[in-house]
Image (cartoon, rainbow, N blue to C red; front, side, top):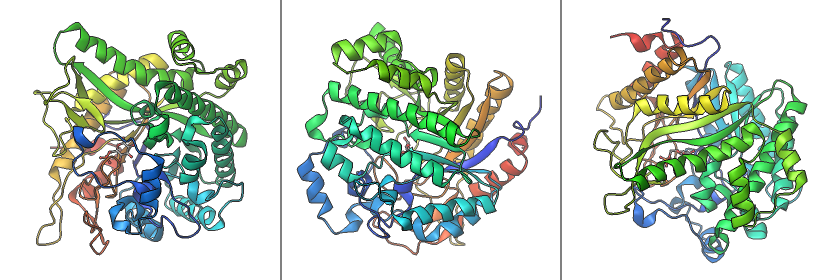
Length: 481
Ligand code: BG6
């Protein structure tokens, strides 16, 4: 069996605009929900909810101490993107995922684009092109503009579909010469768990009927974007993206197993709609009958006409479902889980389960039979800078190596079409769930601490050189030692 990954495999890394760019209220950008996210060190059960009121939003918007909201500063990718992309290119990568911040392109609720924002992304994508790196672009990565929250209560209003589709159409046309991979929504299934983060839904509108309605609007937006994407450029690829969660039952108690099944349903149903172009029959009945979601005949047609042609997912860990929620229940990537005594955990309590990526890939491919792209995978950890300035992150190398070896089996033993692997937070950025800087995923270190102090200097870690060799050998170096 070859040790190489397939020809044209996409090797790369990923970030999101709101966790990296900074420049949150300059160069014409208006605030997004990420700019009011406060730091929640080591997220736990007590601070796990994302519920927030309009009053609280306004009070945070009026707070001018940017350090209280780390995503406002990001890692200042806005001013450093050239150096950062050059460093990324030093790892030989050919793909880079980031998002386009909606409120940087359209800072107000009008159809007048912000020229500086438009130009910024041109420069980013042209720099990628210079180094032979293909951008993979998320259109909504937990960064709904604040004006959408204040005026429409987030995605609860049907008009938001048109607004988001216009933004997407604008950027897909504007960047059609440099971008051909589009992901409408990051982890679309997260809306059910975190309606504010995913859809800007405030405390006032978080009932299940509003949640399923907002999800329906995002499905419609995704379908319209897919249809537009293929007409703008027949070479465009549009990916549905889900949170790749593998669930295990805690015991043989039937309820544990039921919860495993339910968890899977919640996530897979969202992919069913975007890839197969229609609601699973049972879900259709549930949302229309139990939750009064209005699904018109025209909506059904829209969903059929715009399907995604690849399935993207994040994968960090597996979780354990139990009929009991008690003190042993932990929060891993904003999801509740019991401890799994068979697995080691990261210092943030996330179980490390390389085989899970294989289990998940097999499950997804048997259901969808479209190319899979791993668009997030990585280990969040504190790093130590040695006296000589180097960072020996063997734990991170081990994590990626074990997952990549499983992925090799997925491709060659399970005969599954995997088209790419993008490591999450390839350069250190602000963490999403807890807005910490010291939770680092990067192969490139950024000299900045939780309080925003530091020179911002970028330093390759040991993992940088390791990944460089993996990519240069198209995976073959994974089999050395
Ligand atoms: C994913 C998100 O769910 O998890 C990313 O799409 C996020 O935005 C990643 O950064 C890791 O989570 P965290 O909270 O450790 O940054």
